Length: 405
Image (cartoon, rainbow, N blue to C red):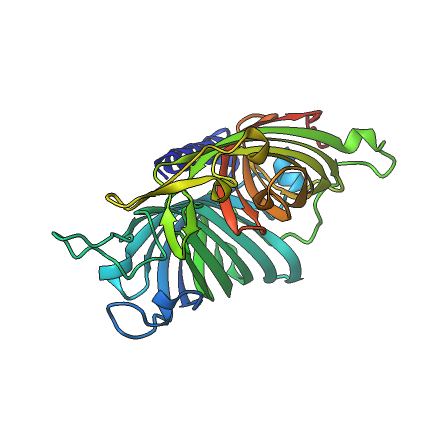
């Protein structure tokens, strides 16, 4: 997860450099919000199998955020007139510091208007993505230490943080916005280390923000269309090529016992995704997905158990049981700097039970240049409920320069 933290720092620097290109023309915004929440009861640890001896139902977080808006005269300002983006920090508690910790989070975020409800009222969305640190992970008891055996939902002191909000925003004055709405969050390490059941919350969000260096007026006008109505089909297509890698751990069942395989397993993948740009902020298209996952189908190649060290041993499966090619349908939300890509697909060339079935992907693309982007994502397979991160880089072919008049 340290690699993920380094990527997040780079994402923050990209957002900051974008604002510095013409800082006098940008609208800057500083805000605070609080988010009381309920913990989903998806694991016995939250239902009472903990040192507290009672269910853990509540969570709470406090956030400080800096954001900026592109000037209305810029290309981004014309295409995305309501978008804002920036970086935030938060402190989170689940009211059980000893076993799970009181983690902090550092993240990038972005939001925009969904609908204008009046001169001073709008319905907005916002997403957060980053890293959280300060967790108290699972520690196996030994003869010398008690460990932290109850917490089998968090396996690492640093975890990814993902969040989404739907907000009702009110503008009491030209420099102020007050917002409230629904909020969901997820913390996990992407199966890089076991255990990794993760922490999920559903709750409320209330906050306020003040603008500096300019005024945001909840504009009546819609975004400028990126493509004229008579544009050719080919002019709306771009092609994204992504290469990524990751690592994970694997648990296997053998003779009615569950073992965590020793060491880390590598993942490397490639995707080629043509995207038809329906509008300036939404694209769809198919994707060819190829992935090699070193821990796939090891269940079928167990060599035995090392009883003295309580370790499971296995033979390396053939390449054909760990390499798969699939086809997925992708939808992408495109905003300034960032794009969010969601896909659902099925492997069509594979061997072995664990590579069959549906999978989905969720990725954040951060554009360093018009064509080069960082790629941070998660792939979930529904056959064996396995996850892997997708940390890599991509290149967009066919992207035309934006000059909006």
